[in-house]
Length: 319
View 1 (cartoon, rainbow, N blue to C red):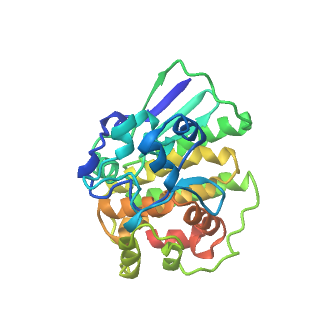
View 2: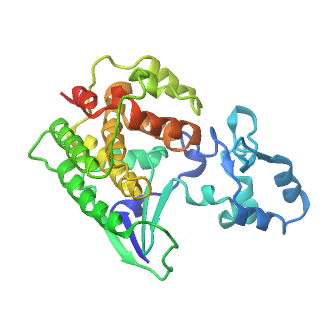
View 3: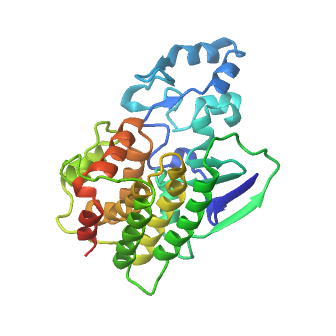
């Protein structure tokens, strides 16, 4: 399998209990089938402790029921994982083993990156001075089974390469690059399907008030948002847009919705411009949005349908 990662990917190191916003707090963790099968082989107090906190969410997924203050039931007073300490990190749930990494498989190619939802990863990408570039390697893993449209996938690769070049065209200011990116995405979207943007009229700022709150600090940031956007420097904006293009653009192979993926990149730049000009703000946004099924499904609907997130409406935030 071919593995593609950002060039800075291997620079990430978890700082464990010293983390200012632990990934073991605030959201539920799914207990995947492989991990559950292993836990059934355990005995004694750890097995009893695991069994005592297993629950079902509203979607029927098996989860670990959170303790007070939305803390994982295995997160100890030192902000370290008791399960990790007892049986090793390789036996913690899949989410715990991989976070803050995301993985997208496309047959013989796997793309992996780190998410803004981790404050350490957020700092890395916010402060990145070199190009947001990529490296590839071949490993011994077999291709993943898939039913993707190969013709569409290879078109998307070409489209994304062009999108990258637009975002990284430093002859232009970042706002002009993002306007070009929106126009480009709208053009290629018209080749795929009829994209209507007027089924929702939720106010622009209300879009960011999520139904599921992971960290109340995000709610407060939305409440006291800037009236006019104050953008970070062009390089930071470029890094944010590149992250969202890398993470989501090729997933259009499943729904043919390129334009929404590009809108995500533009809105990613607007997040610090309106809600706080620092790496912490984009971290909070990512954690609230990218790691909540409820919030993400609502966000996807608004991206596709909201008149205030139409191409022309988003351009007005960039002028």
